[in-house]
Length: 463
Image (tube, rainbow, N blue to C red):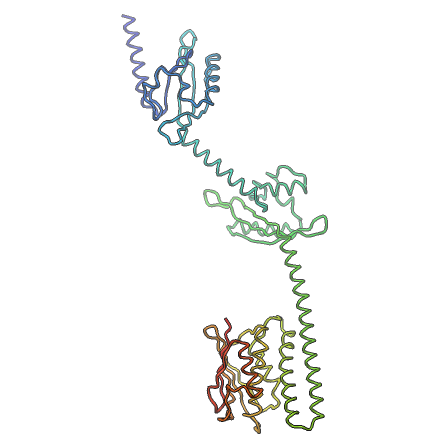
């Protein structure tokens, strides 16, 4: 009766254990402590069948490179009778990679005498957890490679200005300068000129309010030279969207700054040189003009005097370009309206003659300025010699317009008449020949649109 009761008791316990084991998410197995064969399992790994598992060695489901370690662990449990927990990579047929990770809790099952009867293995599938860890590790390795394979200094600080992270570039720099190996927990201000502390604290205060700040800083070195850094400061937010720190990216731009300074000095020297060149050309042209004027004074031939006078005025208009260039802030361009006004004043000999200038302004580069000026000079000289001849008052109008990649200039005498017997396109006269020559140099066109008063339409491509 007692044996029947004991049998019934064991059966109830076994049934209870079976039901409990089937409802657990983990794999529960019982193995023989001598040959390590599987005696029982509540379920099998994906891709395996129960008949393939029961009666087979537990090592069949462990990767070969881990079998030695797994066997040593089992031997140690049999020897000491203590529970061990390990993590191992195992085989999984249904997975594309064929890999799975399990956390094994291995405990001895003892008889009442203390002798180990079996070994209980509870296997928890930690594959998802392990894959996340691997992915996180790979990302961390990539980030580590990125921040440590740059020439920039990268670090982060907390609200007390203490280093929380930094890359090898900053670590090596501080290590050489201060002999510090580990910067974590040290203040960033300990390694910066105290005279710059207030400036940096003001930047940090702005960043802690959520602002991104960019700054260029200069630092003096022991050798007496300056190092220039271009830095950006970014807020670091926690889960509650609170700014808990600052990430700092700093790049050494000393070579760039020195190159820019050298370039500025070179440009300054070039400006001085060009100014001197233009000044000397202007003076030389003025000397030639004066010599022609002296020659005029000694001539009795009216035609010769007029020819020399015209040549002298052309030289003065040429000199005007060089004079304006060395007076200008830039040696590469001239303002059109200012240039036309100066040109008119340069050749006008009668205060009763006025210029009305309207329309768009335009910056003439030096390659176009001389041709435009000399062309307008010839038109103005024609106005003074013919349309305005014998008059005390006269008006000349110049209207400019920028349109479709062209500079359009409408030029009008507002008095006089272009003689019918004169062909504007005939270049036998010096003045008309020069006008058409200068227009060709500009790849433009000029048209006599009205003979009375003489009006011209000029188009110059500027695109």
